[in-house]
Image (cartoon, rainbow, N blue to C red; front, side, top):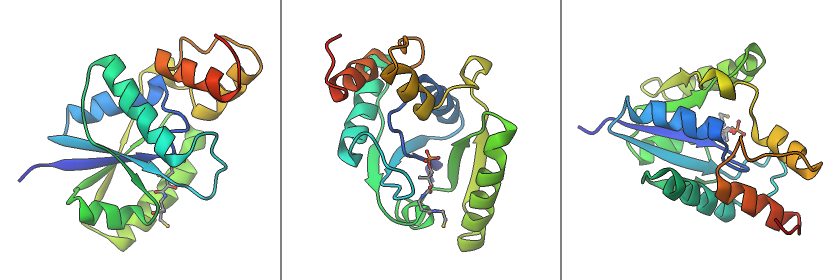
Length: 163
Ligand code: PNS
């Protein structure tokens, strides 16, 4: 049986840190499905469908292919639907741990057979997040080292700026 994992997140937008974690996960599983969450706890800059499109564009840019889906429900229900045995999450620093630990244990309670696998991105990505990239870019900083070129373009377009 195919060993399939889900890589869920808000991806608002996808960063080089997300891609780094994804590439590591792809070495461990037959398939890693990127699952773009509606995530009503956050107020995303991009719509769910646009975030999904941007992940696909980033895939094309780094020369990989893979399934990218959107979801607006319980992650564990999605794992069942896709027959995924694992959920991938990136851990950058201790500050990520508390939320991730809580979520992993709740998900395990809901479905004991789905494991959460934490992967550390490359150390050059440990300080990266979608939020910090958006803040940096919005305030005129150079975001090109942190996100694929398609994301740089999408962010500038979203902010109504010429490149
Ligand atoms: O990139 P993020 O914002 O850290 O991703 C968080 C996400 C979307 C993975 C998480 O909030 C999630 O899984 N949401 C779906 C609802 C769910 O299953 N929550 C956990 C159990 S209540």
